[in-house]
Length: 95
Image (cartoon, rainbow, N blue to C red; front, side):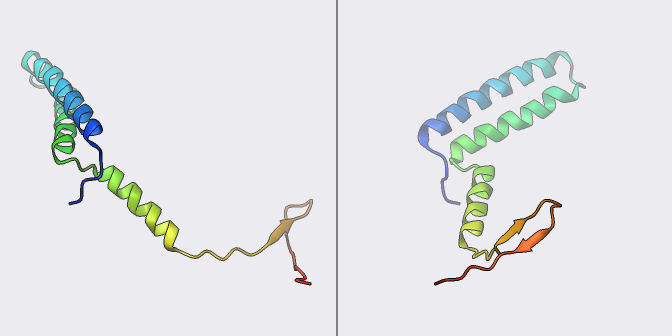
């Protein structure tokens, strides 16, 4: 697992994650069967884990998709559209 977020970003994730976990835990103490604080606790813990490991799965997926589309060679045909939105093939004379 390669680190893909910076140090400042990691510190911000840890800080915000711990804040969310603390808020959600205090809400869970008052209402233990409420589902929203439980979801927030899980998401906050995920942010803390991302900050500690300095690895974000969403950033990784975004970077991988950029590399995927960068490597492919797309061949586009030159087409123009006339007034009734039908494609008209354009030929270019290389002289």
